[in-house]
Amino acid sequence: MKIILIPMLALTGALMLQPALAADGPTLFKSKPCAACHSIDTKVVGPALKDVAAKNAGVPGAQETLAKHIKEGTSGNWGPMPMPANPVTDDEAKILAAWVLTLK
Image (cartoon, rainbow, N blue to C red; front, side, top):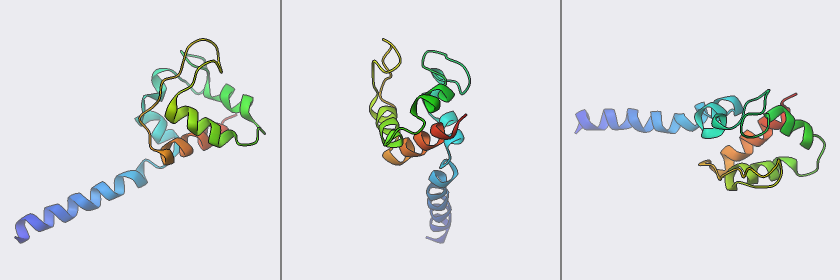
C-alpha cells in the first residue's frame, strides 16, 4: 500500500502545482495556441498584441471584453478574419487579457 500511496501523493502534488506555474501571461501565451496567429510586436494572422493593448487602453471593461474574446472567439474587430475560440479556462482568459493590456 505504501509503495502505491507515495507516488500517488507526489503526482497529486505535481498536478496541483501546474496551474500555479502557468499563472502568468507570457507563460500562458506560449502554452496556448495564441502564438500561431499573434505576436507581441508585429501583425501575423491577427493583430500584434501591443496594438490590441493600444486600442483598448483606457476603455472601461476592456479586460473582461478581451477575456471573453480570447475564450469564445470573435470576428470583425480587426478585419474579416475571425478569431476562433481558444482552449482556455475563464481564469486563464482573464490572466491573458490583463497581460495583453500591460503591453506597450
